[in-house]
Structures are given as C-alpha cells and as structure tokens.
Image (cartoon, rainbow, N blue to C red):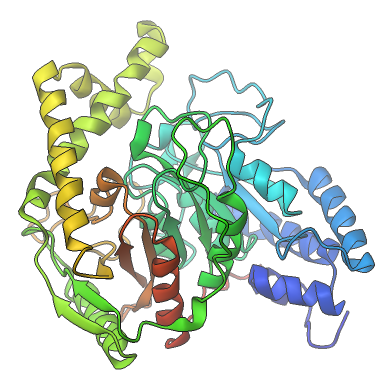
Length: 472
C-alpha cells in the first residue's frame, strides 16, 4: 500500500472519486477498501444501526473481480470497486425484500431494482442493506422490525428519514455511496441532517421499479459525501430501464461535465420561509450565508416569495400520501394490522376515509402548484431554501418539538417538489454552533438536474466540509 494511504481509516473516509484514483494509482485495491469498510462496519454499525444486512462474502468476491479489472487497466466505470449500500425499500437480488415491516414474508428479491442493476453493471460493490422506517412512511428512521437508527454526528439524535440508514452509513464511513428513495424528502431530509449531498432528480430521470405505492411522488436517488460522487452515481442510475412505467426522455449526458462552471450569471431566488413555519435562527443564518456565497461567486441572488399555491402544498401532499398508504389495509388481513408501526396504521386509516372529492381536489391543486413553479423557473435559473427548518432532533420522536413544546409537523421544505416533480438537491450549508449539519436545498426547472449539481459543486468548492469520525 502506498505511504499516502495511512491504513483502513483513510479508505473508509475516501469519496468514490478518490477511491477511483487510489485504485488507478495502485495505492490500494478494491479488496483493501472493501475489507476496511467491513471492519469498520463491524465496529460502528452496532452503535448507529444503519445496516440491516452485510453481504460480506459476495462483496469481497465482487471486489476481487474489480481488482482484476483495475490491474488490467479495464475498469467498467469510475465507480468500479466502490462500495455502495442500498435502502431496504429498494430491491437487491438475493436479499430479503422487507419494506422494514414485520408483515412482509422477507423472501429474497428475484431481481435487482434498476438503480441497483445499473450500479452493478458499473462495477460498484453492492455490499449492504440500509435501515428505513416501515414502508418509508415518515421522516425519521426507526421501525418495529429493526429499531432505532442514530445520527453519527450525535448518537442521541435522528439522522432523519426515511433513507436514514443510507445517510448514517455514508456519514459514518460505511461506504461512500448509498441509494435512497424520496417520496416526500426521504433522500434530502437525512442527507441534510448528516451533512451529505442528496439528489431527488427530475421525476422519471432515474428509473423506478417496482412502482412505489406512492406513485409519481416517489423517486430513487443517490446519497453521497460529495457532489462529484452524486454526479457519478447519476451517470449510472439515470440509464433507462424498460420496467419503469413513467420514464423521462433519456439523455446522453455526463453529469460530471460542467460541474466546475460555477454560478456566475445565474439568477437565483431565495425562499427563506414557506409560510409561517418556525425556522431555527441557526438554520436561517447558514442559509443566508450560503446565499451570500453564491452572490460572491457572481450569481444574482434575490429574495422571492413562493407562489401562493404553495400555501396548500402541505395538505395536498398529505392527501396524496395518506390515500396511498391506505392500500396497505387491503394488502394484509385485518387481524395483522396491529403489527404495523402505530403511526403508519393511523395514517393509512385516515387515508381510507378521504372522500373522492378530496382526492380529486388534491390532484387539481397539484397540477396548479406545478404550473405555478414552472412559471417561477421561467424567470429564475435556481431557487434555494433551507432543506429543513430545524436542526437534528432526538431519536424516538416522529417530529421535532416546536418553540411551544408541541410537535412541529412543518419542519421540512422537501415534499413540495415531490408534488411538482422538479429536480431538488440538498447540499451542506455549514455546521451549527453545536456542530450539527444544516442543508441548503437547490431546485431547478424540469430536466435541469445538471444545474442543481453545478450549483451544489460551486458551494462545496467554496467551503471546508468535514464528517464525523466515530471511534472504530
């Protein structure tokens, strides 16, 4: 091993792009990297509960095959030999398809989901499954099946959800890449709470199969330590798959190209608040500082108000979400419903009671909301906002407490853009006084996934970023 690689800890903290260069220079091999991460996972995962399954034998076999390709100078892609973990809602062939539920039969998946298949084709080492709340129904990560997942920055706090296991794994050095799902912010929420870059691409850009019960709210997305790694994952995950019922038009695009073009000349709208929800002053200050950074880099940044249709977005989303969850009540017999997470069961029962008119009205409101935001993007290249209004909060709570001590249900600014289907990325805006990550959400017009990545890269280049290093 090259002297620049000071042992396993360095390999576990390397980005995917860095690992690729390490393999290319022969400073270390995919087998050494995978072994280091397996050793670290054995020590760290019991503390954070981010991984439900570690397929060590298959991972080492894949790493050995990758090592041989690198030795021949024939890697399949820059991700060849890079370890990646997969949220348990996303199918990986041979692994139990649990949906984090006590009610599923836990039978092994017979096929990979498209995102997993594309990553394997790129040579990535699919090595572990990540925790999720049951059916991904909430913005924190705990389930009756697997228990509580913890934030590596502070083990008393939640990493968010529903892709909280994916986020905690990447932040803790258990592989630089993870696949999450995002039906209302479930990639962006935990990425913001753990200091990661997390992308919800334009709806349909990343093929999805099997279709989520949440329909066209749901997306599969990359979760990474760097914007470059996010772009590298998107290059692979965006490849078309005939099983996706609603694909976006395929693009022959390298999403790493132009990442360094910056934001000079771009017009950026700053939305600091969506409605009158509580905004933590530290979050506000860091988002304002990020906006000033963009201005310093040559962008035109101006405060804007969200379209008035946004005021009802929360309720519109709830109607879509709860009405989808009620399908679970028909999927499983009534005498087993008490095995659901109580919060999930409550939401499904509410969804069961919606009259047809409420559903139709929500669909109409969603269309009007999407049009309103399309018009915003005729005048602005990007819109930025806090990803979340609060800092990470204690585990065991479904919501943070508001200033009045009551549960605060309006703490995320993510679901709006699941309704409108626009590309939205979260990228670190900095750390609070107590050392906790804060995320900046960057949104663009449909199919401008390249632009949100470019803006994220510009902010990243202007900042120093760190990650927690738990004792291993």
